Amino acid sequence: MTKPPVTSEPRSEAVLSRRDRVREATLTEIKSIARRHLVEHGVAGVSLRAIAREMGMTAPGLYRYVPGIDALLVAITADLFDELADTVAAADTSVPAEDTELRLHVALRALRTWAITHPAEFSVMFGPSRRLELDADLTPALETGRRFASTFFALCDRLIKEKDIPLPADEEIGPELTAELSSFVDTVGLSAHAMPTGAALMLTRCWIRIYGVVCMEVFQHLGFAVNDMEPFFESELQNLMTGLGVRYLPIERLGKPVTDTPG
Amino acid sequence: MTKPPVTSEPRSEAVLSRRDRVREATLTEIKSIARRHLVEHGVAGVSLRAIAREMGMTAPGLYRYVPGIDALLVAITADLFDELADTVAAADTSVPAEDTELRLHVALRALRTWAITHPAEFSVMFGPSRRLELDADLTPALETGRRFASTFFALCDRLIKEKDIPLPADEEIGPELTAELSSFVDTVGLSAHAMPTGAALMLTRCWIRIYGVVCMEVFQHLGFAVNDMEPFFESELQNLMTGLGVRYLPIERLGKPVTDTPG
DNA sequence: GCCGTTTGCTAACGGCGTTCACTCAAGCGT
DNA sequence: ACGCTTGAGTGAACGCCGTTAGCAAACGGC
Image (cartoon, rainbow over all chains, first blue to last red; front, side, top):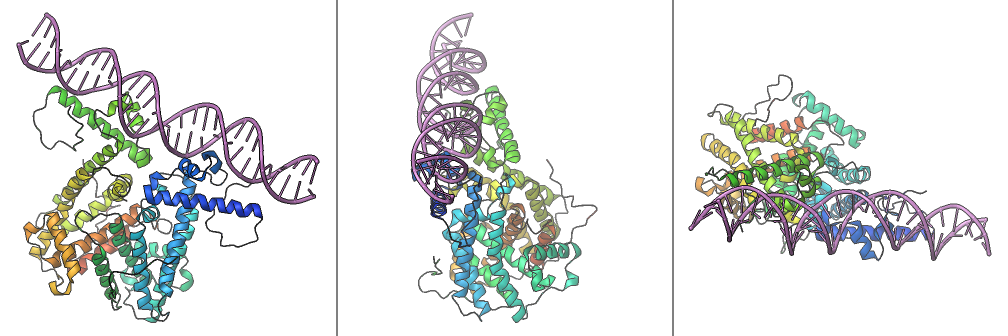
């Protein structure tokens, strides 16, 4: 009675029996086809029947691998967070490790680039949560989501430790905000780093702003009036960096932005 | 062969024949039931069949009023923008007209309050656009969306004219951004106000940030780590206002925020 | 070779959007 | 007051969809 697990990528590379390997392969195929449908037809265009059809099997058969379509979407979302985390991490490590400022620029730009080149995926990950309308179990997605976020947390932590970022003092933050911030710091596992409240505030403020520009671009909310949101993103990035006391590093353009997504 | 128009609220109060009146009423009923379903079951839970069932008629009958479910959702979205615009406008006019700073605070808070009290509606309006996955005609929603935005445009315009907001100089903006900004200003109809590029930049920057916090709250992206996003919103608002050289006006709390939605 | 487990199938239920052909009543001109 | 036009609404149907139940075949350990 091994219930369909729908775990994301098996980071635990244990020895697998032949049976388990083909099972794994089938699940991977399911998710990869589902993802293609997601990209091509939007999230509403992902259907078990269509996937099964394309695989040469019938819909009920998929229930051996996935407990339902909601779970499948959650599983895909989890994979996507992993992929985005990898992309950002790759960009991060593509520049000298000591240059924290550059790493931050590169990481944030990698985030945006991935987002705008994968709008359907981004929408599923960052758009209105299924939580609002569904009772699906989102924990796997949240898990990998945290892994994704940790990339940025680490960078910010580094930045704060090595540079003298102007942080708001504890007194001027206000009790409610302080409470929420410490709750945030705890949940997210930053308490290990003994991150001061002011730093957490700075971090969330930055994240909110980045999230804002990128969402606005991907969801095309200024799409009716603006062609290319990149200048806005860069402007926001600059504003943010200088606010942090970090010097803004413009894109060195050759032709067009070439922050490609490896993998 | 009068094709279903699906216009939003008839702002043109022309004399209507009896027939037209009942027709109007039916359409209103359709939309109101649809909206309830939207709120109760999410956007995926809105179906013509269910609406028809509740109205005591059959699904095909609805096609006399609405050309399809996508169009219905677009129509609802348009109405929602109107409603949100009204709510914001009401808040705006509830305080002394001369006090532009207060009006800005009140209007922005009204926006947030409406958003978090109407998460399903907000998601439809500001979440991933159906444009990404659908070919539906969104113009009605865009239309009223513009009306909604104009409330803030007007306020910002006022603010800029009467106060000495520190605006970025034209030279330091960069050609691409300048181009996009002027495109934005033109499309949105701000060129009539002869709004300088720096002001437009400031405006979009502010809008991006507000959009960011509110989306983050409604889409519950920090929901796993944070209970109440209000302190974050207020912090962002404060940061934004002071950046504009406007003094931040804290909420006068009695018990809880009472920025209610009239009508 | 046997037997439990895994896999996939068919059939079926109920829900969905949408189209088509049709009925029926309201409204209109005369 | 009559007939005709037009619009509202229906029922049947098509083709999707998710999901469940029961069943047959393949597989794998013994």
